[in-house]
Image 1 (spheres, rainbow, N blue to C red):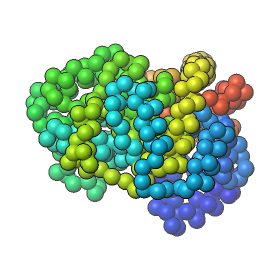
Image 2 (cartoon, rainbow, N blue to C red; image 1 turned 60 degrees about the vertical axis):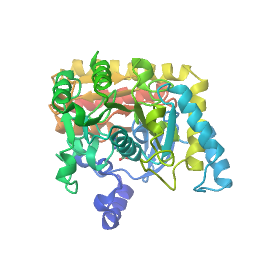
Image 3 (cartoon, protein in one colour; image 1 turned 45 degrees about the vertical axis):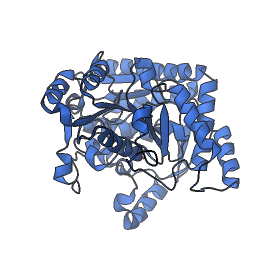
Image 4 (cartoon, rainbow, N blue to C red; image 1 turned 180 degrees about the vertical axis):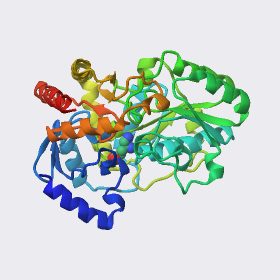
Length: 427
Ligand code: HOZ
């Protein structure tokens, strides 16, 4: 049935490790051949065999307007006709920086890079350079890209494949990363009491999206802000997923907490490779060429990516009903799924924050990585395969989020829920 995907996967394996350019895409934990994608439009994605799927992967978050949005495509084409990369500044980069600055008040200055990983890696270096300290605190199950300091006990593919860490990361470097449970301030306080003057930064996904969606408990982010402030530690919000996904701005706008640095990516690139990090002027001014902390990139602020990103942000800024619409659709899907799971008597917790959600296949409440790890991943895999065979494309891992876009329709929701009903019947 998926003949073309199967033969492409076979061929890909000859030349690309594991046949994919990013591990979760290999569909390993759901034990099925990955789909090779031929095209995507609106809420739908089409594989090489011509099958249509309602897409909730949304390129792992960026496609908030749906795939191939005509205005975004027009902007990319217009930009491409003027040249695809100059390695020199352009006016569009200023527009992007101004839009981010206006939308996220804590970001007084911002630098563009080419991926979320690069944004986080640079923000950590900057925090270390600014404070003159080396240790960092991160939370188990949070995923901040694949930079060396951040892969220990991480979420996303690392959690999906059950990899505890990664060879290739010097032990001496890993020792500088302190891993603590998400949603618990007490261990943070203890670590800061013990190592306070050695800690450069605390980095957190304000809503975790890489161990499945795990929202912060009331008070957790506030505590992090208080603790960091009192000890001169840089607080970094990794809003690569949540930035412009939950509101026009960051989750920090909703939470009313101002971190010192913020990392962005995904949506601000409108589907092209982009990342950004920004924050307080006095920290950002440490960056070269103003200051001594070095960071650079040939494709940083790439004109195509800026065109796609600025157009996407404008569309989000100018239609505030859009967030209500996608949140409402996610609410309907999650509410109905919850009902269907309960009807079936299947233990599951469905978490939703705005337009992102995860169904956790476990009977215990999920609030950190240890509790997320109680999920029955084999059962999730069966659910995933049932949904896929009925034309619904979810992330191929228990430890990822589903994303609703503005292009999803009531008809898509109906299709999703009937697929869910039928899939649950056979579980
Ligand atoms: N790290 C991404 C999910 N959180 C997966 C990236 C990809 O495979 O494209």
